Length: 370
Ligand code: ATP
Ligand code: MG
Ligand code: FE
Image (cartoon, protein in one colour):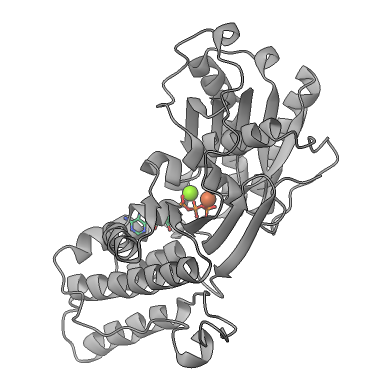
């Protein structure tokens, strides 16, 4: 069950190779540096960078895994959601490889792949064995719990998923109505004059700040949005960060107008607290109300120190088992795509063929395109 996975939905060109649930290689090339001066990912630049990086990254992953194209049992590629032009580069490369090698191809969902990464073990430092020595049927039927929750927080997404089966049944419980959590970090960093990407900059600035210095709003937590457990409001599990961003901007403007220095550490800490508080509160609420006792945290914002602490605390209180994959598997990568592909192969799901295209808004219920 040797599967190669290709990821190109945003600014990471990722190619991974797995044998069942064992990670053999995870090569990632990021165009992040090229976006820094714009303060955000520029789709055109990302697409171009994918084009440059795609073949070398595929080569690197195959070399590390110690396998050739002909050894692969399947290829999986992110078909969406993501940036259209960026996705198309990965999709085209995957189709070309599949056609050339006569390998079945799976067009998989990026968000579900973020969950699939939780199945992997091994360090991606290559195969300990040659391909023909790889154990057959490495895949136990279902290594993930039957009713798993996933909290995905990144620059493009803030979502709570319910995963009844990673190959058959994934449901969106809540999502952001405006900015993603990482996007909010990046915008607030800009307001505070901190570097892009804003997440790490705010995280370190916040270390010296008081998280209670400013009472920033917790979006969509008013009673009319939350409703009750029996009569949920329309946005009980949804998020909104644009009001928070505006509140930070007003505070910063206030200091400037008074000619006072902005207390950057206190603002950063208070902002970070507001984001972590609302995200973890809603994730735990969604788990409780859906009988979910196991939660996976994924996406680049999983690096956030406050979010990690608060998620762990609140999950422990609620009796929810928390899994946080290693950070290099939380950010975008090809191994997660390969991991989901291997599950689809193991479950006997039919390959996607070559007729699909990139779907920038692929819903989570479309785990693999047909
Ligand atoms: P996608 O949304 O498609 O998964 P992305 O490139 O937008 O991809 P990631 O690469 O997963 O997202 O994560 C990048 C985001 O994570 C950025 O917005 C960055 O500011 C944020 N981030 C990184 N480290 C931290 C941190 N320590 N605290 C908060 N946010 C962080
Ligand atoms: Mg990224
Ligand atoms: Fe992602």
